[in-house]
Image (cartoon, rainbow, N blue to C red; front, side, top):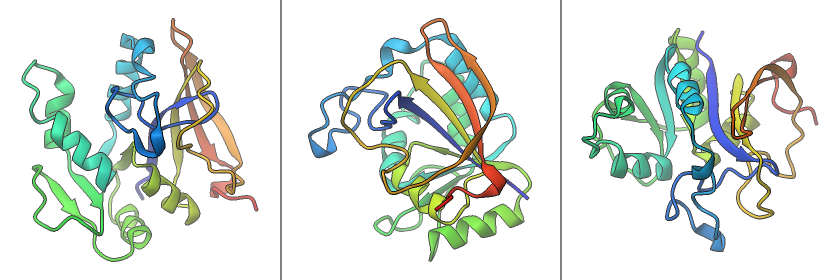
Length: 200
């Protein structure tokens, strides 16, 4: 059975909104998009690459899928991540998008997203990685469908923004692995205690 792995950049206070670019996500008046850029270094790229070695597909929410599609397929600078993203199978949760999806190797999930993801987990052997897609992550957390969290925790407190773990979520995790980059980013791997994301 495949696992679902969440791969996210976070601040110390759990904010996951808009880490990559200044214009990435300004919803709710968020002013700090691009906050992760100053902490970028090769060890983080290595962590991303290693997370893809056993990946059979990517899971996206609509907004993250459209953001990635608008950026990555157009790159022609030889970045190996472009080829990986283009060729990997992508599954998209959306009630607004219609099939066929524009990016190659993309499939629109039908019906209940948690049920569709649970079916994929049963059918496949290679793991699925979620990049970004906070709304999707939250919906799968509620159904105990997240098997692992790979979190890049940055030494930064923003005090505002969308968080990975909302105030209503009681979540017990066990630490599986950790390493620290030269700029103080802690690359952590957590798994739910007893296979469940919720303790309450």
